Length: 167
Image 1 (cartoon, rainbow, N blue to C red):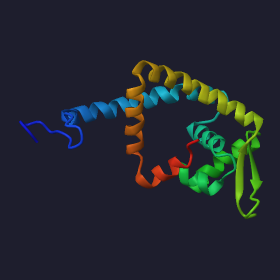
Image 2 (cartoon, rainbow, N blue to C red):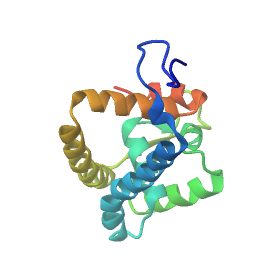
Image 3 (tube, rainbow, N blue to C red):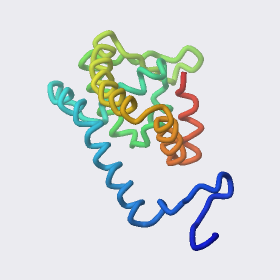
Image 4 (spheres, rainbow, N blue to C red):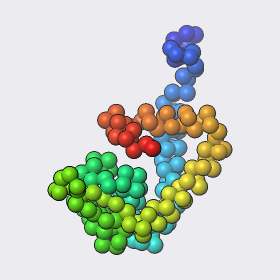
């Protein structure tokens, strides 16, 4: 601390933005950004009588084709009962296919059907439009900083799993 200013050891950057008021503003912005980010998919999901849990399941099944039910449970952090309800509805409606594991027949591997892929595409397209516009307006440096902030907010154990979803 020099002259009453808090500075970082790395770059000498001024860290006065870390005041409680600025952090509360950041928290509020996260709430409103999340509300905006989920509003477009929420409108689409109403046509299917699905909720955000369905959206998250479809998203991660698409991202990690063949994901096991246990891995999906781990990523989503929900109870087995709530995930089973969501998966049962998605399977019954023809959006998700559950296949017996090739290495372990007790495992169930999940895949989107074409109908599921179409829904996932519609949902992610809506979010990509919003995110692309925000990223374009903010610029590449802000996007890198935003990604760094989000990654650093993830619990360390979950961060390892997120790395496995990339690419």
